[in-house]
Length: 354
Image 1 (tube, rainbow, N blue to C red):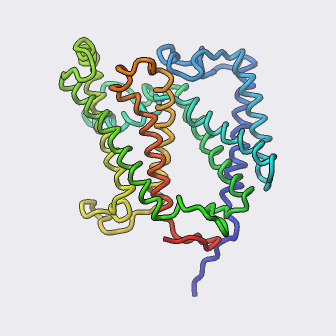
Image 2 (image 1 turned 60 degrees about the vertical axis):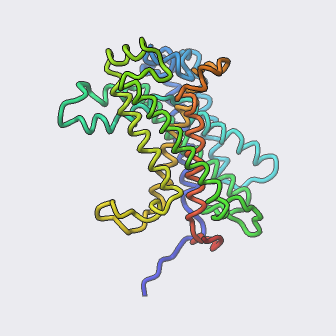
Image 3 (image 1 turned 90 degrees about the vertical axis):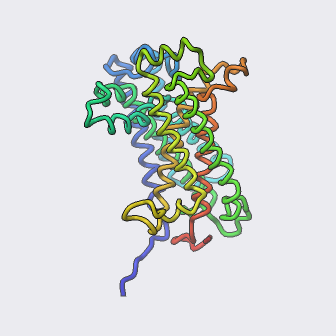
């Protein structure tokens, strides 16, 4: 008889925490390198000039910022090492608060919309590759060093997110694998509750990119919807009108796919999918994809918050970009709802079940 032994303690919490420590130490060393005049400082003065105004660190200089990066890297490594133990009381908050702050900084604030743009334009370049269109090197255009650095910071932020989550569970005495605990009286994360609030979030995450797509396609068709006729003319002269329409199309497709988080075809492949039709959808596929896109949208949404003139409601109410933060939050909540709705009993602690 073939049996599978499941370890009582999940391995990923310690791995991701030590991963956050290693990342922090390595990036801190990079900050030290820049502080002593090393080349490649990717923020502010080292960033692409046209992008500095929209960047969180658009005014940064190597002389002033690199030493801070070095200090934060060392502090982060020490913090992560301390988080490998179970801590309670005020010490728990003292460790958990900066851990979540580090995750927020690296996932939401440091990157900007250029990551979303690079991801969004990838399918356009892939489809046009056999026809030699667009006439540009995608990797040189989409991934200059400052954008690659953003991806590195995003990776570090995801490590810190996992480390903070693992530490919170460890300190609360919850299961390291699923986060559940004996006697947990919470009801909002039950499958039935998650189905209710997850549905609202999923339909919101569907509507926002659809609004964006309608506006960008109107511009491509020379309809000045929420835009001036002069602006429409400039978009067509520069070729950005159809590029934007393509990006909007893929955003709308992503919005439709979001509905799978609350529809049956998010759990069983529908009939129109070749080969896979009728088979169960691996749970990790929607969860990982939704979380990854949420992280990308979060940084774009933060940039939208920085550049939008919120003192003029007549401007931001009709601006598709102003709703990116709502899109990111809604997709994140919908993904979390799918996770809670579809998870079964934990293989390690035995709690839960649908």
